Image (cartoon, rainbow, N blue to C red; front, top):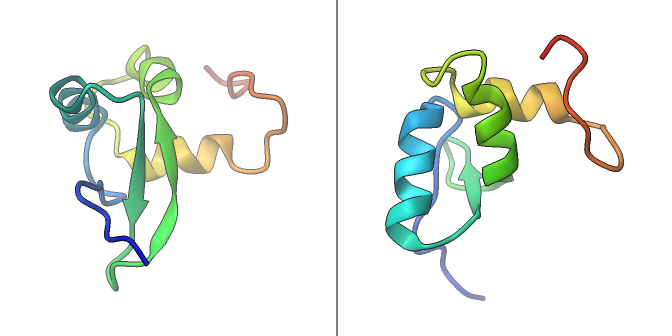
Length: 78
């Protein structure tokens, strides 16, 4: 089993997520819960879509907006 080197938590902001992505040269980051278990992934595309609303939105809120959406696409309210 491999360990996660860098991860976000649901309360991290989109601004923080984008900074981590740029520093690490990645476009996808894991999001872990309080117990350290994986709760999901957040992509640069999701971060940038939420950014249009507010860069200080929590990652967890953006993940919830995309939950269950097949084939991508932005949430209707954005």
